[in-house]
Image (tube, rainbow, N blue to C red; front, top):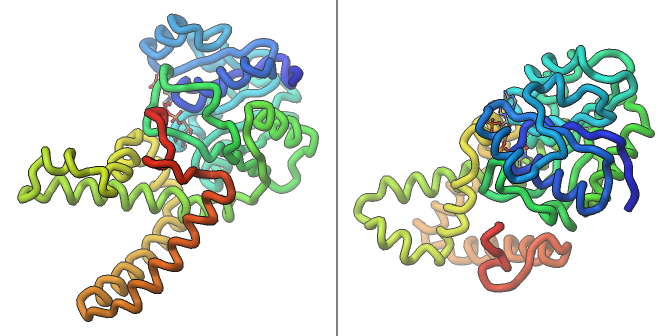
Amino acid sequence: MSQIYNRVALIGLGLIASSMFHAIKRAGLAGEVTGYARSEETRDTAREIGLCDRVCDSAVEAVEGADLVVLCVPVGVMGAVAAEIAPALKPGATVSDVGSVKAQVIAAVAPHLPDGVHFVPAHPVAGTEHSGPRSGFAELFDNRWTLIVPPPGSDRSAVERVEALWQGMGALTDEMDAEHHDLVLAVTSHAPHLIAYTMVGVADDLRRVTDTEVIKYSAAGFRDFTRIAASDPTMWRDVFLNNKEATLEILGRFTEELFALQRAIRTGDGDHLHAYFTRTRAIRRGIIEAGQDTDAPNFGRSNRG
Ligand code: NAP
């Protein structure tokens, strides 16, 4: 794979940015990668572990001369970061982001960007429950989808370059509009996370089941919920606050189905339960066939999620 950008700037140095850095280096996709994170502690860690060719003490310094700037911060601060870096962006540069929500991020970022700077939002649908500069690894995006969400009228060559970068990092790519993206992700990621948070919260409230029992017997399904519910609280707070409509729509449907299943259990309607579980089993099979998970024990997961 050859170089796609001369200089890439990563703003925010957590799981996604550090994985991007390693994946960019693995394939030689950029001449230089600069980085910036809000806290001195994270910047020091990044310097210590060699994350980024150059770690800068301000976002403005990091983006100066960059051909691509990727915002890798929580969704709720994307707009403020865009406002901060806007005056320092090189004419002709591309700004992208990795936020898990797209419509609100586009609304928050786009108004700050000067004419002549391209905006190509993206979302790698890959992650783990870990966060911070030490949590990244080059393989995170391999064979996982990255959704490119260009606003209408985007410059095609800028879009194709961002897409090529993600493909170079190992990802499969697809294009989608922002509203559709947010609905799809509400179904596949945001609502499931909220359900996992709730389930773990319920177990925590249920004092009749001891902590040791919860831990000891968690392989029976609960363990996957706890893994999801260990995800970064700031990131997930921002996801729900910024994908309100789609998440509430899916949770509404979820609640209705839950009531229907609850009723089937109470009335002893085994046919309803069996038909429902047969339908859901087919969805699981489809995911495995699409290569997005494995049938191996423990879902083939290593500690890296
Ligand atoms: P993370 O590991 O928690 O890292 C977030 C980074 O953002 C940290 O370096 C943090 O700096 C920095 N930051 C926070 N507020 C900032 C501000 N106001 N100005 C500058 N930097 C700031 O997060 P992540 O998991 O990489 O997530 C980053 C983005 O990727 C989010 O938008 C998220 O929605 C998206 N995403 C996440 C996943 C996932 O599974 N984790 C998957 C796909 C997309 P400090 O360390 O100094 O606090």
